Amino acid sequence: MKSKFTTILTELKNHAPFTTFGAITGIILMLLFENLQHQTSHDLFYIFHPAHVVLSAMATASVYSFYTKKPKFVHVLLIGFFGSIGIATLSDSLIPYIGELLMGMHVHLHAHESFAEQAHIGFIEKWYIILPAAVAGVLIAYCLPKTKFPHAGHVLLSTWASSFHILMAMAGNTSAPKIIVSFIFLFLAVWLPCCVSDIVFPLLFANGKNTNLHHH
Image (cartoon, rainbow, N blue to C red; front, side, top):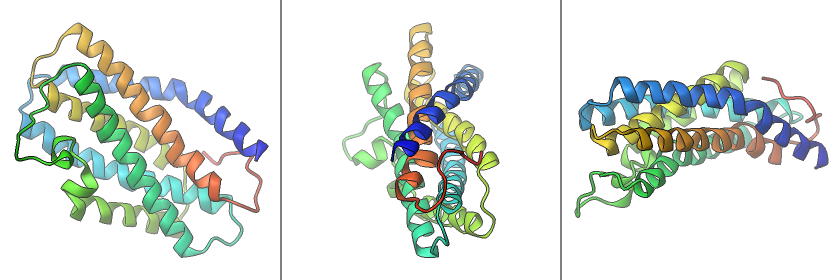
């Protein structure tokens, strides 16, 4: 348990610089596309979000497989599926949504919309895209477990998905304070959730192998 806890703290520390870089790219996207129409931002969100889910499932399932003796497929599937869906939702939808509310942004709320539609909860709003994406990521990881590219890739994709989620709420009304606060939420939306998804969650269930080194 101690070695796992040490690994988790080390990974969180080591991921901070790359997460900062990712958040910067997200801010650049927001500045470049600040006048993007709401529907276009919505469509782009649903390109980056499912792509994030695929790579997140690959990374989560791969880490579990690396640190478990003879991992069973059903265990790899469950851990990769729920780890990616849950954390991707937190990272891409819920944390940005909270940031938007705190900044007083217009979030395009309508009385007839459910919370899932207001916050763009992918596995509910577009379950037919998100759920297969998670399964596909797990299947790829089970056949060819890799963590370096999936982890780095989904950190960036998560940042970009969160950026377009915030752009939907900004509706073209950008300002320096909003950009600064958006940077903070982009960092938080990626740093903790993605490390939890790829490292903490699978290591909690892993057994039988050394957890002092992470394969990414």
